[in-house]
Image 1: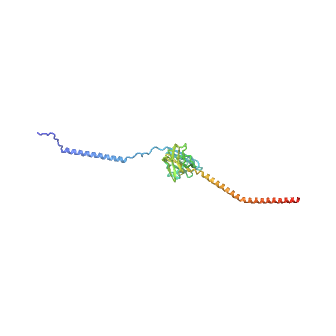
Image 2: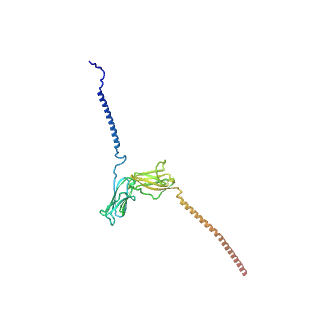
Image 3: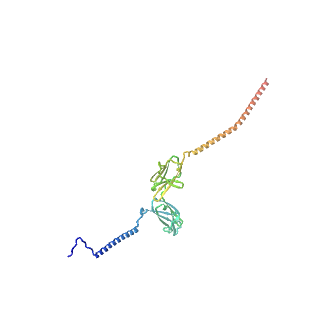
Length: 331
């Protein structure tokens, strides 16, 4: 009989050991393949991931606007004021003059330069020619003078610009040293309000923006809706020059300028002082002339008076002699 020893484990056979080794290798290979698969998928996702849109870029379509002009003469100018980005369609219609041709060449120009690929052949339909151009106006570069030209015989000018600053002052604002000056700018009530206002001062050939940063401030800027004003305190002669107000819109800016002259308090008195000096010199010259003339006439008057006196004395003497002789005769 075999004795069974307690607590002694049964040793696996060689076949079982081989199966365990093969199973361990299979699991390792499986884990390795999964790891490679994860890396490959991540690499593919990294390469193929494309952002749908750039951050901050609006995909809102532009509002549409159409401007049409019917030209019956040779030229016409149409001013179009824009303040926001817009998809603009320009339409030109020309009646063709007295002797219209069956077809002519039409094209577009911007600021005098012909636009590329804009030449087309226009057919005479219902006794008129039609020419159309679609534009995307999104920045200041897109503004300017667009012209539709009909065979170098007629044209329509579309001037695209932002609303202009109204009430431009032709004469300068005059104030005194140590005083203050107020400069105004405004947009007409019928035009849209600007987004903001800016002020500049011309320094040589460059414009420097005016910033209220001094304490106490020499500059004060107050802007409200369509109006803005610049207050300059404690004026100096160096404050004289050109000041620019800028109305800021979404696609461009409108600029106007005003001249400021700062003078001293003696400046207005200069013409009066000049006139006063001229009057004093004139009076002095007149007095000197009269004095010199009086000195010349005095000796002549003295000689005449002496002669007259002598004559009178002689006459009196002769009269007395005659009267005495007459008395002697009577006796």
